[in-house]
Image 1: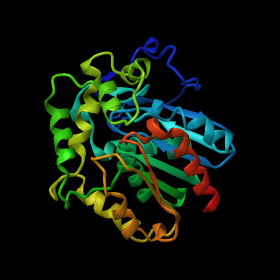
Image 2: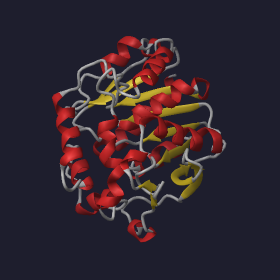
Image 3: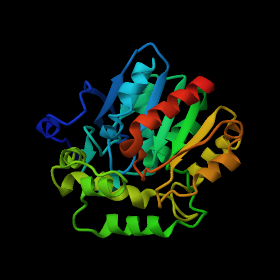
Length: 302
């Protein structure tokens, strides 16, 4: 597996991202090692809040939320998925698979950090990976907040908005990461913020993980991840711990996805679900302060 590592100088002087770096070497599943980066803030002895980012962002997306959650008395963990942020980036898109992303994060979060009593907040691919982590190790998790995400099996039709995004990601000669994130927000991002989202990717060769992610979303029953998704849903059909949805009102890709969780997950029946108004797909960017407070209130009430 050929690995690329973003030069450190790409991350100098990022606005509003003062967090100390933490790195861990994990098994790349081929006998080698991958260096994975994660933010680890707050009291190390407190229960953890796990913040899982998606495509094509990185832990920078949570910079507004991390201080609020850590001041609330929690340990806050925000990893960079392999291929993103300060984590290593396999240079061949065929090195990425849905299962590998789950296994890589399980190695970091369970085998190395040994996290337990976790509150999961997950958005976009952070949900596809994070919810699989829950399904594989349910005893490690206390509650879940799902935002603008899903757990598709491939048995349901994909939205036209998602199909357009998937086609663009595979065909565009250049994948403009910062502009993509800006386009998924209702707020206007400053040029230096857009540049911070571009920072992990010096050129197109670093973007193979970002490129392939949309194509890894299960879109037919023949998808390689289909059976794993079915097994994961078998866990959530019985999940009776607190499960809240906090979708935004302005995301065409995941619109309506909250009803799936609310209707099928027992733990979603007796909690107060939230809608984050005037926010796009990247609600952490548009309404980070509000989303952080939603998480704290959810924990306090459950």
